[in-house]
Image: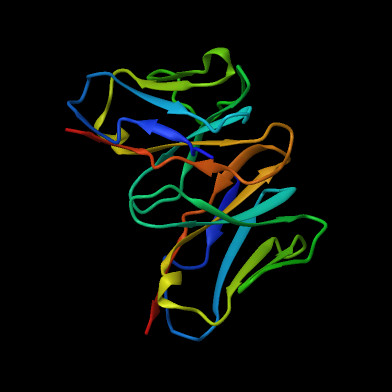
Length: 114
Length: 111
């Protein structure tokens, strides 16, 4: 079974530029999460999708971050404009819908804002 | 505000001993608690899940307890091995929503 795919693996941008990350969850997983993990900290939930719909985006900085999940499969997370404090690893995870079960994580995208 | 605290940033133990990691939470009534392992440069990997009405769960050398009165979970690794060295994260969720993580504890098992 293929795991959660994320790209790119690494990204370096200058502050005030924009950046987008892509995630392809495990086939059949209706729940998709985006987390931000700053070095030395635990993952922070940014947004959770159930199929196409957003069920939790309470910690998403909506003035600069946006996310979409078209057709209930792939998802993109965008930052525009980026700030230095956005430097982190962005993790995508997926799980079965309607069940409290484990989340499967991708390897993440390491973003460096200079 | 809701807080999830893992007892220490780092824990060093000798091979063969039992490692005990703690996860405390405040202003939270989670229905489920999970433990994940994270290696450097990798995403977290699921280990165990325990429900609020369960006291204890075991899987091979791993054991997790969940005390909703104390608002605490303990995670034990028995007969620890150097390969167990990693960061361990606890995560709390309200049903299938809002899975929140603690900061993690970095475990080092010395031979």
